[in-house]
Amino acid sequence: MPNTKYIFVTGGVTSSLGKGIIAASLAKLLQSSGFSVTIQKLDPYINVDPGTLNPYEHGECFVTTDGAETDLDLGHYERFLNIPTSQANNVTTGRIYQTVINKERRGDYLGKTVQIIPHITNEIKRRIQILGKTGNFDIVITEIGGTVGDIESLPYVEAVRQLQWDLGKKNAIVVHLTLIPYLAAAKELKTKPTQHSVKELMQSGVSPDILVCRTEHHLNESIKRKLALFCNVTQDAIIESIDAETIYDVPNLMLEEGLDKIVLNRLGLTASKTPKLEAWNHFLKKYKNPKDTIEVGLIGKYVELQDAYKSILESILHAGAQNEVKVKIKSIHSEEIDKKNIEEVFKGLDGVVVAPGFGDRGIEGKIEAVRYVRENNIPFLGICLGMQMAVIEYARNILHLKDANSTEMNLTTPYPVIDLMEDQKNVTEKGGTMRLGAWDCKIDKDSNVYKAYGKEMISERHRHRYEYNNEFLKQLTEAGLKPTGVNPETGLVEIIEIPTHPWFVGVQYHPEYSSTVLNPHPLFVAFIKASLDNKG
Image (cartoon, rainbow, N blue to C red; front, side, top):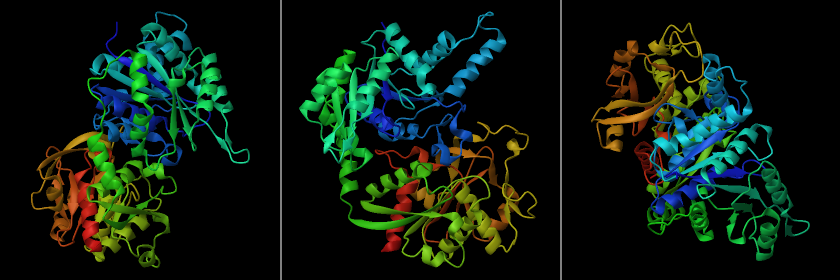
């Protein structure tokens, strides 16, 4: 009998219902009940990973400590569970097919005809169970991307059917997230879309054990009875998921609904303690009862899509709660910034974050934003490309190297203060070839960053091809742009600061990836504190 239990979270009716948040909330409750839990995401797209996807397509690309470019839902998993994810926590159809085709080319299938069943479904099942077999987890929650009925999702649903048969219903259950829409004209909630969604799932041989129903209005007993009757689910396994004020309220709502209890009952497990969520609710209390308000500008190229900067927005929220301050975010498109309008655009901002990105679109606006905050003593945090723009701005306006640039934007710049990393110069493939994952950094003790971290050695996640060009290190340092963090092995400048500025920090890495509810990232906490001081 297997030690690890599996929970599959599927979605019906429509996309964007919040499977990731429900999965993360359930995991939080089970973790608080004394179980070791992890969550993985199965993505039906044929891309091998989201690393080559435009943020407009799929939101941000989240990077794990072991260097995997993954779905942004893994960010939610880490923020809720406060434990790191890995390469094994995100599986795509592209990766599944790539593995199967490589095996076929090697002759591993001994000349057999390679088919969806059993070869693709076997590989899906193997991937699902990796965390259970190697990670020492009591429970693995698997979120299946897409909506039931999508052609792309069919092999995953079939793999779930097979796994339930292989492992037994007590060891593998299905939680189906669905929508109960409210028709304003009729003034009633309608169950028909959910009935059809469950019917679609059952036609694939999978019967949900628990229904989680997204709704704008409370479900009455009559609706629950109807759903139980038509969807082959017991009435106590119909869970209301009403629209919440914030995603961080969802664990409490699921606790009230008893989702954790019904899940443990279906899995035949007994909790060692009752989930109380004390630290979680302490965070929520501070978040909902701020003592002050500040406004922070987020300068980016993809600000129309909030998910493009999801981890940054959540990190600012965590840091705001830690400082007991409400942070209003003003999203500013870097293409819309110029010398003529910047004073008006930045009016009233207490701090500015210049976000990561790739390519030359909107670059001059980011450089102009850095110049303005530097000259006007506004707290600044530059992340990855944002840090590189700070170096370029300083080279142009303080060192007067007029055409200073990154070779990413201008291959023939006479002053390549940002240049392609040496180990990237012979790289031709785009996917998974950047500097990725956790790298060490040694911090100068006489710096704002050291004050934030309180330690000299840190390890942070990276995702970049271009770096600070050390040929300009002496010039820039002597002019006042101090390298306060360096990779001890490569000498790569990881952090830059201006000591004469109240709080001006640029980092080559991505601190937003490791901020969680219970451990807000110290750099964001320090930045928000500096922005609050600036307002004062």
